Length: 188
Image 1 (cartoon, rainbow, N blue to C red):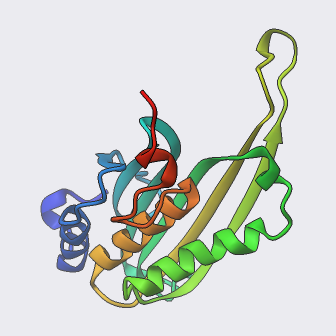
Image 2 (image 1 turned 120 degrees about the vertical axis):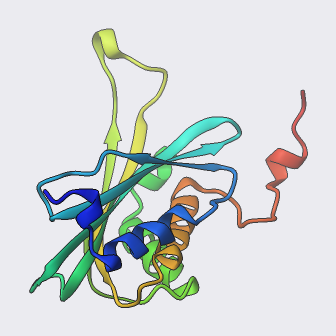
């Protein structure tokens, strides 16, 4: 691995763009250790999404940079994500959910003018019922989004804003500035 001082300008600019983003208050971003074997230069963020004080989704966004480029990336820089979110159990069996979840990502990137190429990924729905010593009050359901894409501009802030918007959709948060009915009429 190269030392940070040897990082190419394109990578340092990309990292600076990610660090400059202020996410909405329900999404807590923090820098984490990046995987060291995927590319010569890497940077990573984790996100925790809170709704009414409870963690309802989490994710990682990893910026990979290889000055030599990769044919499959179609560029020198790649963004990779893994997002997991709790679902209401009736949503876990919805056959349209994977296609809708994919559009949460692509639409959010496009709405933030985050241009890209070579996008790909998987959407996984799971439902779990616990038994015996692990028995719980009710079945749980989760959604997992794994995706990667190559930015076609140096504006990584737009990509992070799009990723945060996708996290918000995945977690069921209302659009920014909108208060849900349940939050406005909380009894307490």
